[in-house]
Image (cartoon, rainbow over all chains, first blue to last red; front, side, top):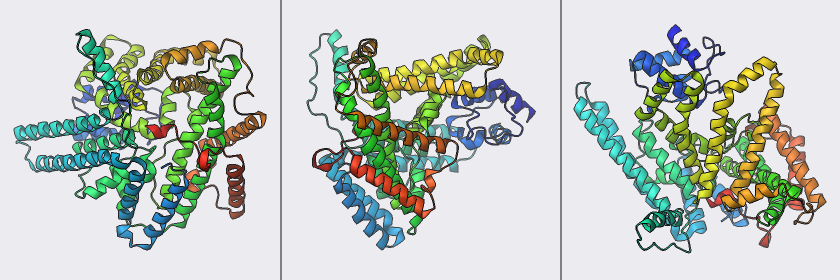
Length: 73
Length: 512
């Protein structure tokens, strides 16, 4: 979880990622940020997030991002 | 057949009557029959094109589902077989996409395609191909082509399985309220609405009527009135304040008209207890161009994001560019470089979707340039804001005004017949004006337009701050509702602009 928050802060600072549950639907993370985030997650965790995985539910919170990463590992 | 004609009204009344008297599980069939009637009355023999799209995506959808199931049934060790099926799936998908794009190229984009081919063949002194004088324009082809592509791509991605009933796929593309101007819908969303048995819901009917009345007010009182002035000024070589007013009024016209049409479309659909997606969300509250396009024509923006932006952004090639940018540039340029390539495609698609000419490509590039400038200067402006400690509300207002100005000029480009006319128009702003009351509308019309704009802004402001939700109807209070209806209907009857035969003028976005 800590690692995911680090990556998120690298994409965009100033968001309370630990508590935020609607990163995409509240517009805190834009589609540009999402592309950055995916590229960093791919690199850090040696995974391949594809366009099929790009649904808002997978990126709404640290927990959902972590679940996606674990699924693709 | 216009959706604000008497014929359309009669069709809706007949359909509603039959729809609600037959058993719930057969009601979608009435919608399909009504949609076929509407399409045939509007486009006659050109219905063949939408039929071809339906047949193609129905068959391709089934094939893709078959491969999805075969891949699912494989063991982890059967990688070769999986790759083989994946390749086949990709080929079928590409075929489906290309086929549907060809339908639109041979209709709406025929002359544009020929003129471009002629440019290339001209280099080699090959005899130019002839352009057609009468373009074939099947109703709603720009909208239903995107829907057709979304259907097969979603199945390819495993989002859902193909429908085994071709008539259900037909209803998805043909559904009559949305065929003319959208909103561009998705099969999974609409099938829930169409094929889940639904009871008669008076709340849904009330919301539908609210939206229809509001849409008619926007179209007939505001948009068509502003349109008179706009038509008399654009391309006439006028200047100064006369042109500035025309540019502003065109933005008002297109917003009132397009959002009004969508209100009517969604309202008619609500009468059948079918909810269509939103297409506008207070767009003039956007603080930058990106946000504007998330609020304006939402369904187009969402389609382009899902089927153009993400596939290109996440492609292996672009991912390499992103990682290269990360290693060799600071955060400042990293984001800019990563977005540059996918956004170029996004705005090319957006531009070309709007029309078959270079003007529309330029229109797409206009927004692309502003978006890229925005990305480039964002870190700098953020630093300035922090240093100067300017109040965030003031910053927001400045950003909103800046976005409105960009959009107004973007609309002027959209309305101009060519890129040259657009630049002439901009140049003419700095020449002497010739008044505003000599171009089809008089002082009282301007007063009506100002009041209309205030009403539009009021609705948008209240929606933006969650004080009203038009999706729940105007109000639950009968007296206030009656009052709103009286005012709006009287305005439409007395102040509405009527053309020949008391039909309102056609919709700008209806030509796509």
